[in-house]
Length: 252
Length: 151
Image (cartoon, rainbow over all chains, first blue to last red; front, side, top):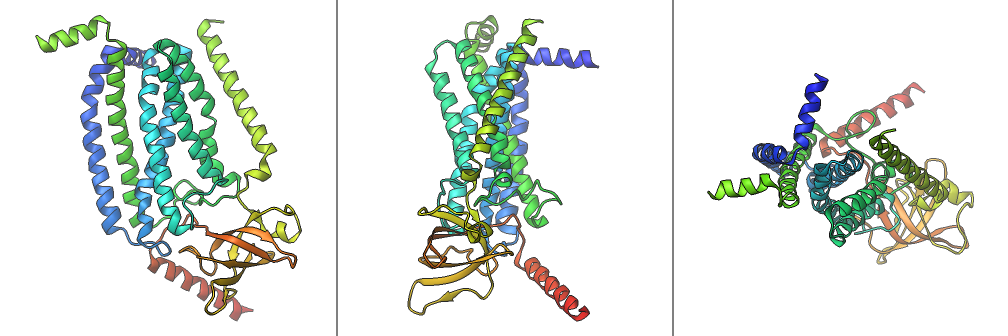
C-alpha cells in the first residue's frame, strides 16, 4: 500500500507523466469550477436574502472571501512546494511554486480591492493603515511581487528556484498572522464568520452560495494552476527528448 | 546523516528561527499592533499625551445628540464597564447607529472628552436577513421582560 503510493508520487514527479496527467485533469476542474461559480453567483446575487445591517452590499462577500482564502491557499501551496523542492531537490515542486505566484498575487489584489470597495460605505474608509488584517494582507501582496521579481532577476533556473524558495519560506510566517490578526489584536476588520467556535455565524440561505463560490473558485484556481505548471514544465524541459518527441509527434 | 536529512534540518531550523524572531518582534510591538485603545484604558489615563489615537466601543443607545442645522454630533461609547463622550463634526458611515461598534480617531481635550476627526463603524461577523434579526431582538426583549417579572 505504502509502496504503491510511493511509486505513484515518483511517477507524478516525473515531468512527462505530470504533463499528460494534468492535461486530462484540467477540463474536469474547469467544468466543475465554473458550474459551482455559476450556482454561487445566481444564488448569491438573486436568491440569498439581504443582510439586516448591510443590505445588498454584503453580497461582495461572494467574491471577497473566496479571493482572500485563495490568496492564502496559493501562498501555502507555494511554501510547501518550495520546501519540497529544497529538501528533495524536486524540480516539479519548484515549477509549481513559480506557476502559482501570479495567480496568488491576483487573488490577493482582488481580496484587497473588494474589501476596500466594501469598506468605503460600511466602515467609512477605503483603507486604514494600522489595521493588522489589512496590513498583513498587503504585505503578502508585496511578498508575491518580491518572489516574482527575484525569479525574473536570476537567469539560471536552478539558482532562481533556490533563492525564491528561501524567500517564500521566510514569508510563510505571514500566513498565520493574516488568519489570526483579527483575534490577536484589536482591529477594524471583523472576526471570522465561517471558521469559528459554535459554527458559522451566517444564515444558511447566505452560506450555501458562499460555500459554492469558495469551492468553485478553488477548482477554477486548480485548473489555472495545472495549466500554468504544464507551460512551466514545457519551458524548463524544452531541451529534453520527451518534449522534442512530443512536438515532432504532433507535427508529423 | 544523509544530505537530504541535513537539508530538512536546515530548512526546519531556519523556519523555526524566523517564527521566533517574528513572534518576539510582534510581542515587543504589542501596543502598536492594536488598532484602537479600549475605553477603560482611556478613562484610567493609559493614553499617550499630545498624540492622536483611536478608541473603540459600542454606541450607547439614546446618547446621540445632534445640534439642529449643524454637522456637530455628540454621542457616548462604552465597553460596558466605562464610557466616554465623543464629539464629531462630519459624515458618519452607513453602519453608524445605536449599539453599533465604532472606532473614533482623535484626541482628548482638557475636559477629558474625546474630539474625533474620523469615526468608523465596525462590522461584526454575523450575517442574517432582517426578519431573523427582528425575531432575535424580539426574543431577547421577551426574555428581558420575563426576567424583570421574575424579579
